[in-house]
Image (cartoon, rainbow, N blue to C red; front, side, top):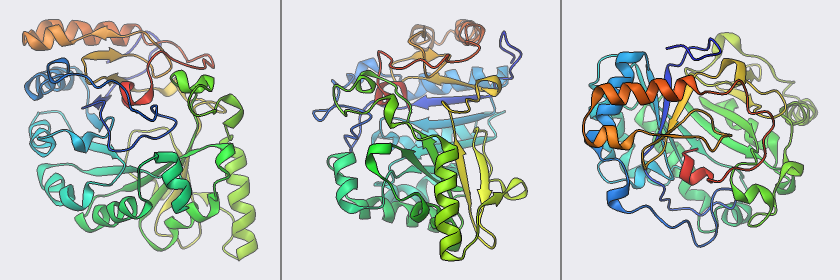
Length: 333
């Protein structure tokens, strides 16, 4: 599938739920969002229909997101159903990791290939501040469970926020002794929180990826490890936009995702499907196309029409927009 700007679209991010067992301050208010009702979210058979049609049209990769996707009951069975769809080559998951110790083995057996685990700080007190309710050790246990289950790659996603004063080098060192792929993601002012009503964060808190890498290199050289070097030959599997580096002798890599300072809109290959059946051409847009009715009636021709409509309306780029009507938990991060 090609959009109107000539980009190949072969990747779909699917939000399974807007619910989460965390209340991260850049994602939702302390009291959470008003959750969608059970009847308001796409059923599993509807999701399978959408992915089946999308696969026939050229989608090869899907990523399951939330909210927290693992709080959706039956997710292991859904992964198995997606894995059985001809044309789907890769199924991945973004999670906070808390439920992985109980679910990693079953997900791997069902056909989940790889996981991204969100972790924004290695300081226990700051972790609870950011997540409001989380315990750092629970996510660290989830990382261990992912490695033990054999997921490859296991990626760690950290949103970089200037006012958090994160220790980027300690994060990067996680890639040294174990096959972990650390990725630093520039904070994206998405949702109402970008205006400062909940988190106090905004455009001023964006830390450009180049600055993050320079700070890591300085600390690494001071410790005698040596600066990061390009990691083209050891890039982890995935369809994302990260630029990867590695320390000499390291088992994993360090990646940088720069949606603001060095945006990658020209190579965007994805659509986003919200839990309530809105197909979105771009993360930084409030435009969406309702695919839920077509899925409810199992109208495969109409599903294909809506997919084509969304692809045809993908913008050329986000044009540095700040703030959207929906927050990350409602869009599917």
